[in-house]
Amino acid sequence: MNKISINAVQQLYVIDCGEGYTCFGFANARDHANLIAHKLDRADLAFADEDYATLAGYDKYRNAVAAWSQSPLTRTTYFDPGTDAEAAKVLEFCRSGERKVRLILGDTNSGEPWLEEHDVVGQIGRSLGPLRVPLLIEPGAHGGSAILCAHLLAIVDWTSGDFLYRHGAYREADLSIKPSANAESPWDVLRREEVVACFRDIGQAGAYLAFMCGATIEPRVFR
Image (cartoon, helix red, strand yellow):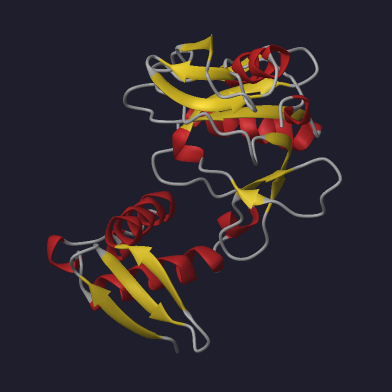
């Protein structure tokens, strides 16, 4: 069994994997355990107040995952705590239909997109293991990265450009293009007054701006 220690300042469990370390947040352990307890109707798996930020709490999280792995639900897709039910439904629809999509991630409280350009275009897959989480698999790839489902602001169908899902708080990024004094990259894209990207020509800048507003433009156009 891996050795677990507590970093109270950063609110993390620190897991000694032998050849390195990985971390897991106190809140993540609590939220996953509580979600599994709810899904399995197992109150004994849920966190009590005194479990938070303790080694006993991490054990409770592991027990919850073990219980999930032994239940029929382990064959279904597992979505992060806080995932909007409609977003989960659309992700499953896209996975089963092998649709290529564009994901827009961000702050679901403010509705502000993060302006991510990597790991946001592809098909929806699913991981192996006891918690079979959704993956974003880019064209030509055989695997992918886990989707931050609780931070989904929108899911766009790549072929039609239609929004299949739009979070209630989502608002299109407030972007503009302005010339700059940089001879190598004379075009800036700004979010309000902050420069977020620089480009050699205005066409690239325009493509980037459109992509960040949800248009289905291949990222290679502006990279």
